Length: 87
Image 1: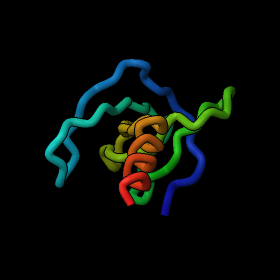
Image 2 (image 1 turned 135 degrees about the vertical axis):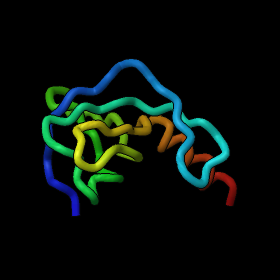
Image 3 (image 1 turned 45 degrees about the vertical axis):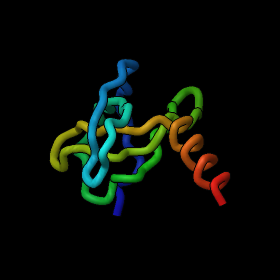
Image 4 (image 1 turned 90 degrees about the vertical axis):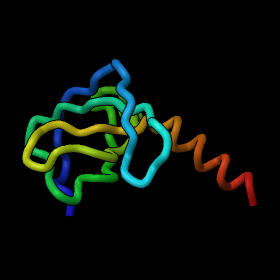
């Protein structure tokens, strides 16, 4: 289960990471959370506190730390569109 709502800071500088079972490097952004990352937080949405905009979802991090990585939402929706268009 997720740790619930947590506030933090989102880096504006992309990094590139090869996730497990993937042959490609993926653009990710670092999120520094105000609390530790909990098991179950993977997949959680990252939403701008003031803007309410969906920035992406958590795909990696280090449990016990406040560091996580997100894939930007525009890339997620582009991938969904590509996959649905392949039917």
